[in-house]
Image (tube, rainbow, N blue to C red; front, top):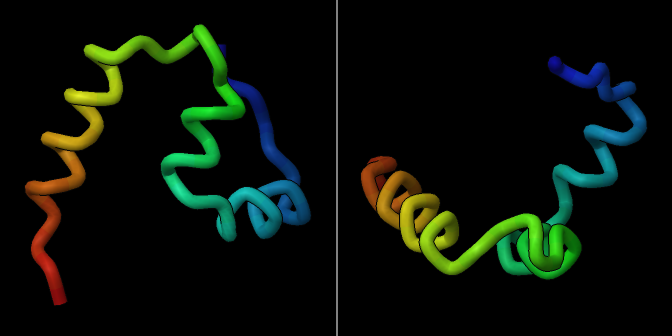
Length: 47
């Protein structure tokens, strides 16, 4: 199930850092998920 997010909400969360979103998620995101996210983000070319 995919939730619809309104444009105002997207603008607000667009300013969040990854660390902030992980803290906000609390125990819904475990350490293994953070490690996998970091691996995926590190694959994005730096500009």
